[in-house]
Image (cartoon, rainbow, N blue to C red):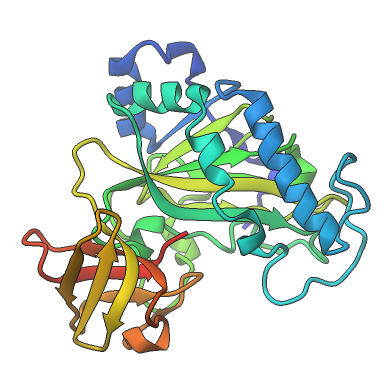
Length: 312
């Protein structure tokens, strides 16, 4: 892989055709993404950024809530830069902001149906730059069978090339590229010249197909990169079951859903079962216990679980 981050081609900005639904759909179908510059409310973005900064400050990773996200050098405890439970459902304020709602309504053709699958991202500076800038290339659809979703990635701060940001592979969104042996897509399956990125700003949003390959790029700055990704259902997509586990074993799960009903779904060897992260297990009990909040995608008859995963 020969590209440096600065050499990666630029995303196409579609903010200028936001009032042209037909052209948005044409670009979506051709590219597998829509990048929209400056369409979100920057005050709503800033409020979420400050919530991140509070978490980072409490862990000693930044010196001030009010300053830039310069890393103190303090080691991270565990596998994540922030404790997700400290942020809780802070994402909902940004997702439900009128500017976000308006933008997604234009893109989807109806009001968005947000999924409780949210990743709070706080990428610390890298100790080294990998030879392959897209080493973490993957497709979210591979890890979320049964969900007809789109991914909304939102930068919470200016993200120039030295902070890396997110890259997507243009026009690669027609099926699973993972070979089943690794969490990453093999490099040879995505043409290097198809990768796209941009210098991101608060107010931007990048929406991409569930099968669009994407990769977080190395952060070579002294700051912690702050972003969030939220999943939204496509128009008319079947809704998953979301709620608390009432009981679970390796043959079925009963979920007390958000409407107050108990829904029992069969689990078999084809059910994709995952907790936090993208780690899959054949055993439901390895990941979940009574009271855990989960999301289950189902078959057409809503009798079998295609996917059971942690819900935010």
